[in-house]
Image (cartoon, rainbow, N blue to C red):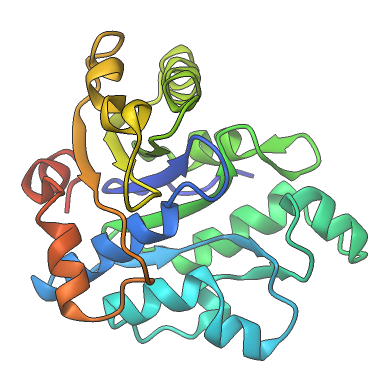
Amino acid sequence: MGIKKVQRGVFITGTDTEVGKTVVAALLAWTLARRRIAFDYIKPVETGIGDRQALETLSDAARVKAAGRLHAPLEEIVPFTFAEPLAPLLAARRQGVALDRELLLEAVRNRLSPARPALVEGAGGLLAPLCPDYLVLDLIRDLGLPVLVVSRTGLGAVNHSLLTLRQLEREKVSVVGLVANHCRLEPEIAEREFVSQLRDFTDVEILGELPFLQTSPAADADWERLSSAFDTDTFRSRAGF
């Protein structure tokens, strides 16, 4: 079974886990909501969510829902949650859940509408296992969406970014651009020069360098600061929002 292709939208993936995918998804949701652009958002699988309270207060889905002022229930936004903070395949197995490609695609299909552009947030990196014989990359191909890559900027980030971009190129997946997410208040030389190094090896558009915030963004002032470091117009034109 396939999924009806979403004609507009973007799949947000990362070069690894904990690189800032949710911050970028929330920033995009905040920006679209502020411009009164209708959109869908889904994070098909999230781990490290053990109960309802965690879903409502700690989940990535809750952060994006709040930023985008979305009305959909969290259970629709993130249809599959697992208690342990592990890769989805392992977390599901340890919880005794037989999650497979068919179930996952059906949940995504029920959430998304071809009439509205979509933000789809992945879990972990491009080759993170979601289900048996099914990686994040496989989900991207099934959805037919272009990809926005989020990378940290520390030592090793150039390597991870190029590996991700070259894998997407090999698979003929369209790339909207890359967002560099600074993870420290006072970045060292490797972080400061991340973008200039990356530009030596790829012509993928760098859509932004997000500054480090000491607390999770919540107020409009936080989102304004991040938005000023992101090329919203180029993103919208390339992703179809």
